[in-house]
Length: 421
Image 1: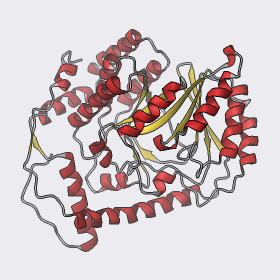
Image 2 (image 1 turned 180 degrees about the vertical axis):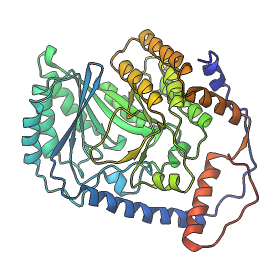
Image 3 (image 1 turned 90 degrees about the vertical axis):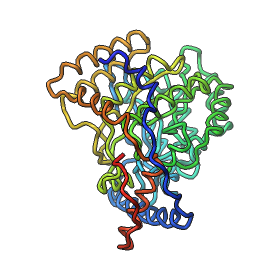
């Protein structure tokens, strides 16, 4: 491993940006986004077709991180309301034409399933946000929470949702119910939310809607009042960013959380390309390159070493397959994938920071010895691109808008020659 890697990442920014072209008029940007919106609706129709005939009421996924079991109970609903609004170009959370499952049916199915599983963490989720009343009825959620707390053979309970869908009435209810249990039966409670990036300018790059840092802080403080934790999902591999910019962005995320949300858990995701998404279209048209998984490993090391009291976890880094959602992963080498996935699984089972550092050091040492040389290629790539003149992320997004309009109209919005980046 390059010993000064972390210091070198901190000092990134040696590159200079090319002069910005005049900004798009609001009319042109609006036009491009309307075309994307129409594309997204067609993709969502494809997802509906994929989900057609699915009679599952609650889908269960078991993830075993070298003995630490995380069991996800996903209620099949009519889908994510944020996705229906066009949010998250990277996401294709399941959307059904409609859900005919009644609250009683959800509860009865959960009662049957809860007795079949035992583990460390139970995750309750829907196709989008399990606490969104419009997606998942409270008449089902509250009895299911009661059953999970009273009968669940788990140490902790996590509810996955959107940051705007965590109300104090529900939080107070869960807190009081948990407190009524004998002390040795009480669960660690947390809410898990997809923020993806703390930088609002970066969130625009995937059209992440409804998230503000002010709201995150507000919910964080409210949960803290009840002794309930907030776990925040962050994604490595945004579109319209080069690899060094992705590393720098995630390093800034870790720094932001350490300063502003010191007790929040941070769950790091490795971006993949989901079927029927705008980002899949970006990839096909040359506007998106999958992240290098070794960049994810390097940022994992930075996170573990510099996150302070923030818990660092890893998810969707290549260890999971979805029975419905097709995706293209960042890995192109089975040897790299096996080494990275097994190491991060091992890290997910332990909480001791020094032991985690040791695993990452061993992982990077093994990476140096791989016959494929992909880790060395990654290091060379960073050295090659760091001093380039380059476009800003916003300019690259605007390039995509231009191509969207050109493809629809057959016209050509031309600009002088510019560098590749």
